[in-house]
Image (cartoon, rainbow, N blue to C red):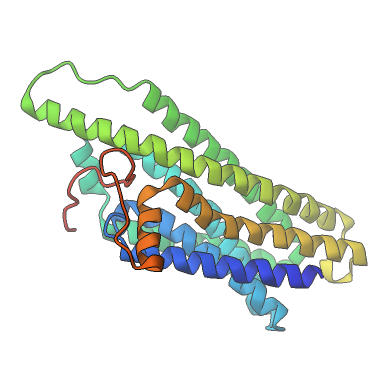
Length: 289
């Protein structure tokens, strides 16, 4: 029954996140460099449940487990990268300077670096011991979630303390308009990813507890008692539920995501209010880089 639940949740997570990839790729408002880390998060939410299905399909553990651990770590680092990205966007002024610094190539390089760092953390520890690997990943996950929460608080603090410039020149007014738009969009986006952060913490907490239990038993999971094995599979299913729920959060919080999904599924044109509802990170017409 536990294995069936893991397969069903993982399969649903793959389908929902593949749909999210199609929506991100099909929508011009979402197909911008500022959504790079969010797209990277979606990819991680595809790879992780795929590795679970491969594991239940009797693929080699030596291949599946590193992929599974790497994808989970990449998901957490992507959530952190989104917070850091928004923090820098509010810190580096004027806005045009930040837009010039964050090019598509640099965003792509940062996304690839997230996967490289994740593999560098997970693979060596798995070669040493599974119990050690999962214990290390649990500490890393909790640490990343804590650091991410600190950055989120810093971003919200910057938003609440924003004060417009005193100068009245045309250039300053234009920069202030861009800054205000960026603040509004960042606030909405950060609330969205705060919800994702909370769900990630809720889903990761049981896994961390079980991983600590396995490690402090001093034995590998493969020779653990039957109830501990069942428990570890259940918490893995909860982790996959985290991947499953994220696309629904995108649909709930990002209006343009909903509009694009309706257009894709219903073959309709959809209705979007560009002034109040559509939330993207594109504060100006994005220059080609």
